[in-house]
Image (cartoon, rainbow, N blue to C red; front, top):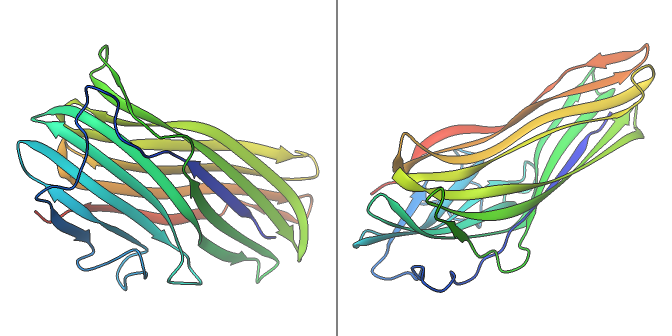
Length: 246
């Protein structure tokens, strides 16, 4: 069985609205994790790369791209680009874009009778301009996410599960930055054959620290073909807390 999940994250990137801080690289220093990685090639130590620039002037600016790489082609990736500003502990702007496509997981179960893969893709939509909400003190920008789960059983393309949702990225007070996308969906016949998925894709700062982030891509599938198959394989893309060098 082969499961293909096409996760299409759509996001936009442009100048911020009037009255916000315009995010431009000025007196910025390069940052990366793992050290020296780029978006051109998968690093040896991690399935992802975070690379960009950081400006530690009075208004802090971070211009950073997170790449998650393909398991077959180390030069292929899906990326999420975040450009943000903070003034002290208060948010001052947010933009986000995305692009690319990568097969981030491929596994076999039951000696190859069941094969599943996860492909994540991202697209920029609209101008991606963040908006400020004075009620919450947050800047937010929406990302439209599409997922397609395809199941193969004994080499047959048996089940297809499309998913779509809108995810909100935020830049909040006290360096609360990131997004959480949780997908839960089921298709098929509960008495015959089907597939369900619970998948979390998230990227967030940790413990109110601009320099410490956690990237998570994980979940679980339920694949069944009565009476032959009843599997609950895990989907593990990445789960990593890391610190950007200052």
